[in-house]
Image (cartoon, rainbow, N blue to C red; front, side, top):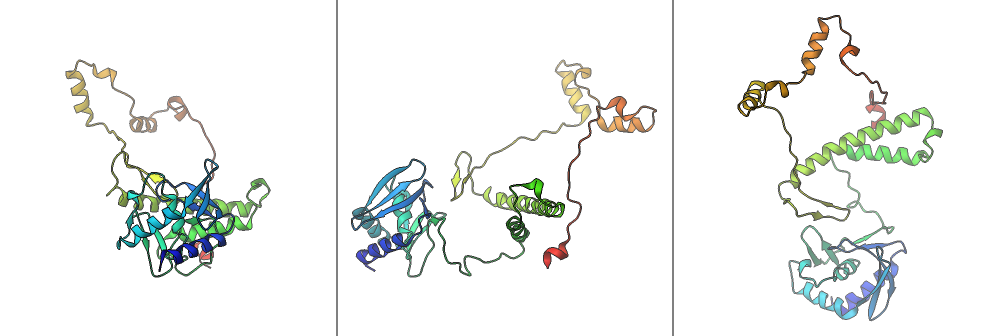
Length: 278
């Protein structure tokens, strides 16, 4: 397919985009909107700075040639500074696709994905494939259904059973999401490096570390402090487990040795899996 043909196809695709369509640039992840389509250029507007910018026909052609010369995909890191709107806009074309994981833009013989979000697009089986064995997916669908059925902007006006259902489903999603997030984090740790954030379309992640401390054997700790000139009485403290044992064999009450403060909360008691399955 020639550049001229591809260019006119791109202009037609941009003209057909809904007004609310947002294009995400692959390197800086800035949100831009297409505001005008002309034969010699495309005008975009950056959402974060309300800045208008013309993208020139000649620059699109240059990128087109580089993509053609790179059978495995053109490396986005080779783009000049501030040039990532060009591959983002090219991805609106049905034969061009940005692969952010690989950091490339490629040309294909079949329809590809796009950097456009917020536009009403026809659903396909590929776009909506239910993952097997992923509880967070089904529980999230239950939650979405419940949120659509009730006006949650006025929680105090909801019936008790609706509030119970929402609370239960939120608990399920939270638990499932935390478990699944941990699995993903374990995989990410294998290739993330310190001080090098990795970005995706919705945010970025970074490897970090935390320190957890636990005391060594009591006698070893006390001996080391004594050898360093610290009296063991300065580091001895009340052992809570031993306090509880002592309470059981004395006439002292719990309030004699504890500051007791009660608080009330809601917890999920049980889940009716049969109802959710149906």
